[in-house]
Length: 168
Image 1 (spheres, rainbow, N blue to C red):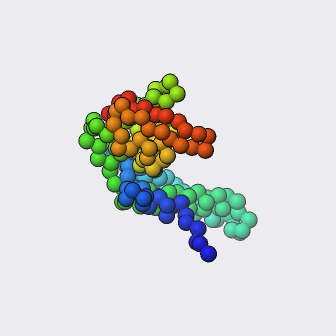
Image 2: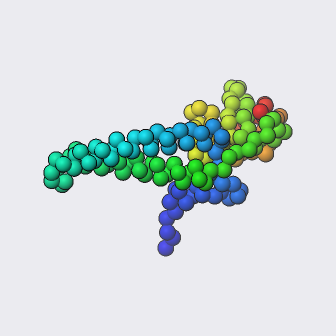
Image 3: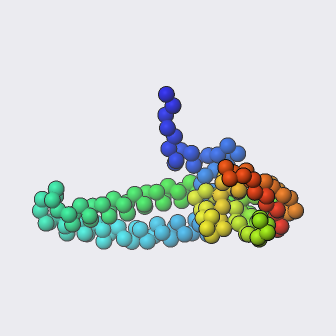
């Protein structure tokens, strides 16, 4: 019997040896800023738990249950952020390159349209904003190619041809 692998375990390291904790300097600053905000919310949440504790019977005290839930959620997010910050590996991008690499901004032509993608680590990916992970199907297909190269992405819907126009 095979034991299921959790998503967090899959994110630790990929086949290409890259680390799931790779993040841009901007992404790291955002995490640090969120950590400061969450730590600032924590004392108020603790006070709310103490205040609602005085209402009596814990099993039927909805305000207390809500306050405890909020405090647990804040504490869990603080722990997660601290761990991610501690393990963060900053993406070092030297600037324009001849090949697509982690941190590159790539302009491609697909289906007679021009699109721009930034190749980032999996924790920062947001395809709707043009930020794709280097381990995503498209990101891994684009890696190590140069301007002028044509790459083919195979999906269940067929094949799509991407021509690399520019790398920043």
